Every structure is written in C-alpha cells, then in structure tokens.
Length: 192
Length: 125
Image (tube, rainbow over the protein chains, first blue to last red):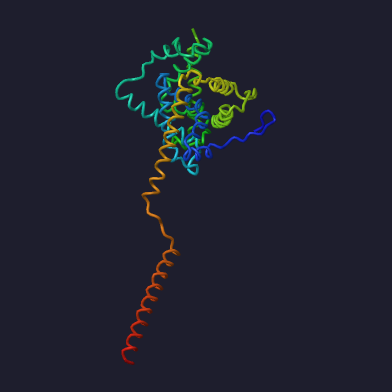
C-alpha cells in the first residue's frame, strides 16, 4: 500500500493472530482493525446500546483468551472472530428470551440520551439510525443476522454461507428479500 | 430480466457496496433493483460504532489482559521445563549402553587376568 510516498506493509490477520498467540499484546492490532465491524454487527442485532457495549467487550476478551485456538488453515481470522461474536449474541438472546423480551421503548432513550456522545452527532443522523433500528426489529432473527453479517462484518456471501450453514444462493436471495423488506418499511415510516 | 438474474446481479453488486468498491449504481439496471442497491448503499454508510463509549476503555482492558496472559505464559513455561523429564536421544542411549558394556568387559578382563596370574604364581610355588 502506498501512502504519502512511503511503502507500508499491512500485516495479514493470520500473521498477527499467530503472533498474538505467543505475544498477546499483538492482539491490540486486531482489536483496532475490527472494533467498528464487530460493534456494528452487535448493534445491528441489539436494540440496546448498553448491551451492545457489553457484548462487544465480551467478544474481544473471549477472542483474546482463545487466540491460541485460531487455525488459519481452517478459516480466515474474520470468520473465526465473527463466529465468536455471533455465538455470544445468539446466547444472549437465548438467555434473554427465557426471561423477558428486549424493551423496544428503551431504543429511543438510548439514542437521545444526552449523556451519550451520540448527542454530538447531527439530529438527522440520529433519527436515521433510530428508524433503521426500529425497522430492523421487524425482521426475523435470521434476516437480521444476515444483514448484520453483510453490512458489519463485510463478509462475502460464500463466507456468510459457511458461517450460517446456508447455501451461498440462499444467502443472496434472503439478503435481497430482507433489504427489499427493510426499504419498504423505512419508506412507510417516512410517510406522515 | 428474470428474478434469478436480478438476484445474482444484486448479490454481486451488494458485495461491492459492502466492500466500498461501488460508488454509483448503473442507470441501465431496472428501477426496482437500482432502488434496492441505493438503499443498501445508504445502509452501508451508517456507522453505529460512533455511538460506542467503550472503544478506548475496552482497549485498555484488553491491554491489561494481554499483559496478564503474557506474564502467565512466561511463568508457565519455566515450570513446564522443570516438570518434564529430559528426553534422551536414541544415539545417546546406544552410546551409554555400549560404554557401559565396554567398561564391564574391561573390568571382567582385569579380574580374569589377575586371577590367572595368582593361579600361575601358586602353581610355580
């Protein structure tokens, strides 16, 4: 990669992960690289920002302590990482469903809470995020998972298929249907 | 355009959108498909990670955890070295056996000669 006339070599994930097994502080490189994608994935699936924070933290801590189990011959690092994140979110919902459902009314409070840095963002952006989260909640858990994997983890349909156990074609079809459905819901929400 | 064709094109372009290698949607595509792709592009620009308050604190926590793990592994390895018995190579083992045997043979030879000498002395006397 050429940047400002200097040549930088971006270390591959598998190289960093391998060195993190021996020297755990190298894991921070992976953390910096993946934080946004992991957080976005969790947020796409969780309405509650606090829960998203907790699950993201748990996911990275789990990944760090299990870095020795990562085998680059079996799957790329992102697939390994997102498998951990996905399992954590699924476990959270399995546990949550036993006791109570997510309080949807909290969503608006989370996004308009004056103590959170989201206040610094423009009101329009906040409203868009709020609408998207409301519409995402109308999708089935599987549709939501696929949308989260696609937009947050940036995986190809093939990789998503491997992770979810669906066929590549199924992933493509379900994603298209979900996006269509989501777009229609968003349009309906926009109508006064 | 058949539904299957439309889905294949959508899947291909969605991959490009999520990898941020598609700036504009082709005007020649059917309107419905264009709308879906525009929507996907809009969604791809939404970044929830800006809302997170934990990024820096989690990094610190991971840094400390990594340090602990590193120290733990440093402590673990010398202990393991003490606990595990040293392995002897096959060549060394053969060497020890051969050495032992030759020493035994030499000792027997010395004893045998000594006795023979003593017997000879007795006979001459």
